[in-house]
Image (tube, rainbow over all chains, first blue to last red; front, side, top):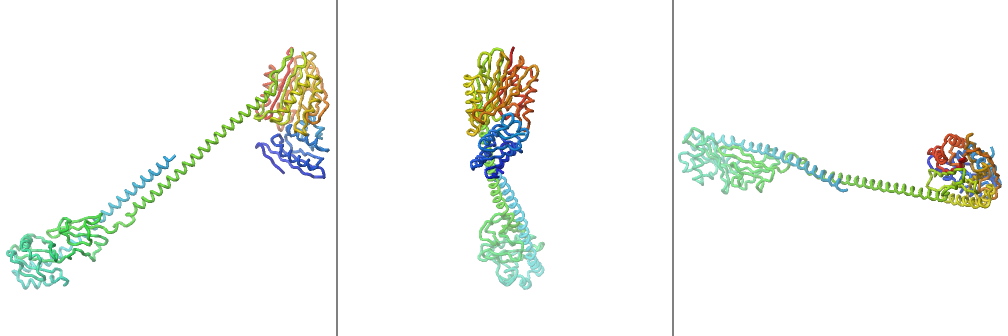
Length: 109
Length: 529
């Protein structure tokens, strides 16, 4: 698990596991904004480059995501055949809904 | 920089010197005092020999007086006291003189001939004086080949009778060790006859050079009608070697300690100066950073304002106002924008958008979208069509960017509001009935898919309404539901009954309340009649 500490009150951690022939699961915890997305983006980019076509993003532990983070998920969703945003917390789901992205990100309550 | 160590060194040396001097003078005073005591002891010992010198002479004089100068009796008596040198007798010569005829020499002699007799003038005057003196008379016969000390005694009250005269030898060189007496242990000495230390009167010494080395002391004690002066000097410190060496020990240690203290002070001074210099440099760096931050923030805000409209168009019957608030991370330009375009004499196109991310990339995308919308608005007055066209301009797969955009056409005459949203938050409608968000259809944000179809939602507005469109920075707070933020905005907007520009300012300051790190764009249109 890679841990990145930006501002003192800000901690995100993520885990990327290729757990099928062409499937990977990305688990994210904490607050995700533009100051912390780059390492996560690079890691997933690498996995996608290795032929993963199905992605599950587990965001149960995400307390906050800004538009940069959501843009990143949209980018992943566009890059794979199957995409699922697993169990977004209500606050996150509300933001995704307000942006008209619930269907695109496979996130329904 | 060097004055403190220098003062430390100087003070250390002064203290050291003072201590060494005090210690030395103490040592010298003690030596003198002890030497004086030793000199008195030794002198008293020498003078103590007087009775043993005087007693045989007194007895012989008595005998002569009683026997009327019987030579045989005198010689028998004198034989016990006088003999040739080395025979173990007290004197080398013991002689009897008649006071009345001193000039004719001794009446009787036992042992060697008296040296004094060779100097008749001296003999006569010395012995005549001795006959009158109640004390033992002493004379030094020192400038002769065999120097001797002469003693003369006549019994008091036997005037005109006899004087007994004795001589004891002195070593020719005057060099002798007074042995068997601890009083002279460790001392150099010179014994003089008389009150003064003159070479002619030197009786005994154990040294070759005069005067005696300092510190020295001289004590004079009476010896018969004469006196003995003993000068002494110590060969080694009498009070011990430590008091003698103490001043030097103090001096060496003091100098070393002073030097060490000065070196330590110098080191501490240098360290403090280094620390001060470092603190100064850090201060310079900090203020430089602050200046650079302020400069960067200025650049960002200048750029931001350059990318936003200079002024808003005026359309009869409505008032427009807009506000841009840079968030706490204001060193970078943001991707939020607003625009108001006059489509014709009574219609306005209201635009609010937000490009994800920050910095120059977000700002350039924002600028291109803003100008693209202005360009497309000139071709078509359907906001859905405009958004579909600009959906081709951004691709998240390429740039990683998304943009949420709200387009609203306001017809000031028919009071129709037509809202089209590309993933953007709905506008707030304020009227006499309160505030409500326009429940419009929300399409995909710009950048998700090219040629996205959008649907517009049209509502009719009550007279004297206000439309507010804004970006998420106004209502989004970490850890809080979006609905709570929207509700807070609605409540605040309906509570304040002020002019439009004041309303925008109040809403931003009230809702941000020091917590916003995000940028905020807000634009409002209010019917004036």
